[in-house]
Length: 324
Image 1 (cartoon, helix red, strand yellow):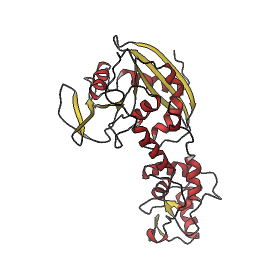
Image 2 (cartoon, rainbow, N blue to C red; image 1 turned 45 degrees about the vertical axis):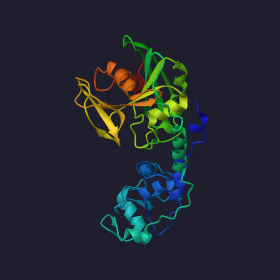
Image 3 (spheres, rainbow, N blue to C red; image 1 turned 90 degrees about the vertical axis):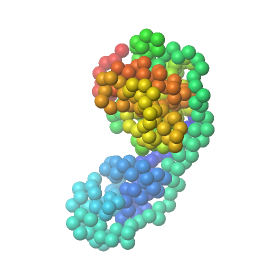
Image 4 (cartoon, helix red, strand yellow; image 1 turned 60 degrees about the horizontal axis):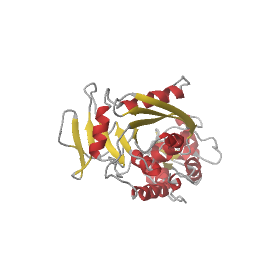
């Protein structure tokens, strides 16, 4: 395992609260500006979550964080009306629930280390180790992995199927705390520490299937690719949403190529029983055609059996139900 990928992860909660604590009286900022100060606008929704959980109202004035369109938004310290009263008392002009002249009172001058930029650099360094030449061993087993969360406590399930018979041969569930919150495009930093104990069960003839994108991703390196590189295992990504690329020609029934800048990145695959497709792409040490062929074998419903059953098992564990 490439330990550097998950060691020394930033405390994004603390970083967010420290940023908001910098906003002075008489000024406001936005969820998006705080996200930019963390290093990526994609963290905007996480910033909103952090504000909703803020318990240090004396230091972290989350009343000073508003929406990008000027609306004051919610407030964990007593709701929007109290937020408006607090901001008006601090000299902020508000009409209805909207800040007057937002640009004039908007605070952007954060002192920050941009922690998400460092994580993006780590991802791009890992991408250099990506291998897509194809899996040369005989694929004997396919291991579906999924994680269900109760807050930041994760329940990770791995359900293994025999590739010849397509029958389940084993299932394992472990649990542990996530060390990083959910932020879009940074999912691997949340998932990898939780699933790490499962990876000792993956041998050289097993391919891992994960609920997420492989190379069919804006960075060309989705969560499934990152997992594959970190653990040096062959992986296949199966996602429910198309993040990039265009659905192109159909080489066979229920299958369409997905192209990005004219290059084949994966496939749209729809089973006969489903109304919507999934998007299959190689994660690591697997070619696009291998990813398609293996996934197609296990299509019974919309989602292939390894990840579908792993999801069920993980959710049962989260709810406290028994499993094999």
